Image (cartoon, rainbow, N blue to C red):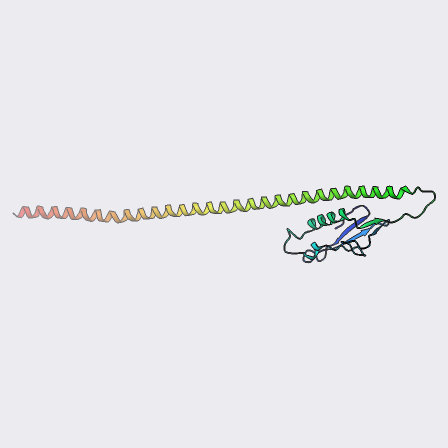
Length: 197
């Protein structure tokens, strides 16, 4: 990963990222140097931040390159880690030229910083939107599963009700036949008795 700012290129050595925090370096251009005793950058350009010390590889929301770049941008905007080396004396050059170059480099740095911050915000917004969409899909899946379970339960209840009605009807019919047969047998016995008398 390479990020270019005025006079420097912070670079991340990503191996074995993300299981360990990335090692991040500031590489100044030829006309720039690393400031001595900078609170976030060592003599050889390695960046030291508490965010890297507290790196949690399983927590991608709080340990990721986007947030790391945002923190680096914030730190470097308050205290830039590089300075412009004095220009070598040349024939009849105005002494104001290095200062103009430095202010131009500072303006370029500020523009690049603003662009990087905007990109970081856009990426964070897109990530938040992606999470909302995923949560919405999960919720819809849960609701659909619940609705399917409810419909299945209703179908089973209706099936059990039909089965019970069929069972009750099948038990009523033999009783009706039996009582009908008994009635006919009783009438026949009464007729025979009457004939004998």
